[in-house]
Image (cartoon, rainbow, N blue to C red):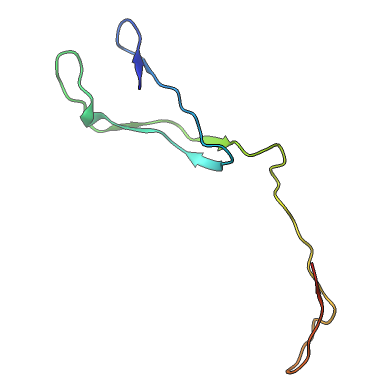
Length: 85
């Protein structure tokens, strides 16, 4: 829930991201038609934040990697090969 300053000109809210998320492109958008000033005038349009990133993954953010090796990389019908991961 947003909290206003004494003059009701600045509203502040706390955003807490979900754990174990990595997202490089995010914005916060406010639909101003749902906002009214003290005189009862409705806002128009919308306001958006600049882009921000979220990374709440553990310190090892690279994720697992794998190397795949084929014993024979030129197979024909009926042949098999060993795959090492």
